[in-house]
Image (tube, helix red, strand yellow):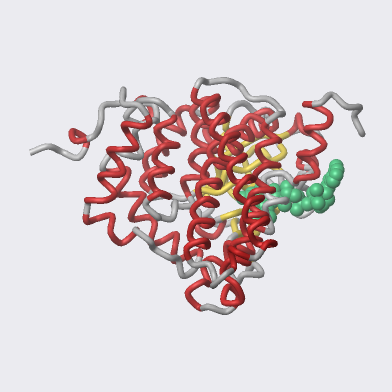
Length: 387
Ligand SMILES: Cc1cc2nc3c(=O)[nH]c(=O)nc-3n(C[C@H](O)[C@H](O)[C@H](O)COP(=O)(O)OP(=O)(O)OC[C@H]3O[C@@H](n4cnc5c(N)ncnc54)[C@H](O)[C@@H]3O)c2cc1C
């Protein structure tokens, strides 16, 4: 009898071959059934339900392909990970939220904190643990280098004191990657660390958003304990690592989002209220949204391929974020139009309404669009600096 891993394609498989094999698995394995066409009831319910598909994909080996063997992966082309996401949205499976963070964080840990990557990669991939990113503070968002959460030496580790805000998944996470001040003012005094949230001295308060969801949290640290081996990279290297992390945030994250947008456009088209697609305004908006989503797809595909070749990306990744903003906003405007008046009231569309409202945050999260435009102007086009 073959074990699940023996039935997998070899790591030398191409993304297209891997995609065919995974699609077959998703169509035929009865354990996948609860996830096909699943519609979340809430952020928390989705997190709990989708942990099952995350575990299944990891245990069967699909999610481990494309990650290096030395950390617990099964090796192979990193683009296999992007192919897995494509198979999931093609099968109308909601992509588990933790995959976004994995794609952003794990490549960074593999370089700057390989011991932590070895210890935590598989529990994260399996969905046994969830982590979050605690960077922003009430007075430090765009101006992140002014953050005030501080870490002070104490015996074999540090004590962390301060406040973070807008931490996605904070209340569902066991640990947080944190930017904290370990030295002088400004970006050189920052370190990146991994802190446990389930300990005295830490309070995590969910924030309720306009959609009624609890997507993010505030986190309060009052002398919380940070063991000595939890610094990612070197002390004072936090800013450099955060900047390196950004390129991963643009790559796989943008790729994941464009897949979701194409999927939602497809759903809206098939559910379109009678004649909606024939109204000139709607047809034009639909064309623009599709063009924006297609531009994002082409751009992020290129970014994912560059990352897979180990290229270091520069400030041009700001363009990926700007394309994401355009695609997200245009897509959701037209999705709402296509569903017609039922979009705002139909109980079964609650999950889509939550996504619609979340789309309004695209110009802000992960670096606001104004900041991205300045980056493109100054660092890509070489225009005079404003500051
Ligand atoms: C849905 C969502 C999820 C998030 N998840 C996380 C997370 O998981 N972890 C985390 O740490 N943070 C997270 N954030 C926070 C996010 O990174 C910040 O909101 C963002 O960086 C902007 O910072 P701010 O809110 O302090 O706004 P500010 O920096 O105060 O900006 C307010 C406005 O002023 C503009 N502005 C500011 N400075 C300039 C400038 N120099 N030039 C031109 N315009 C400027 C901005 O573009 C913006 O429009 C999330 C935010 C959202 C909306």
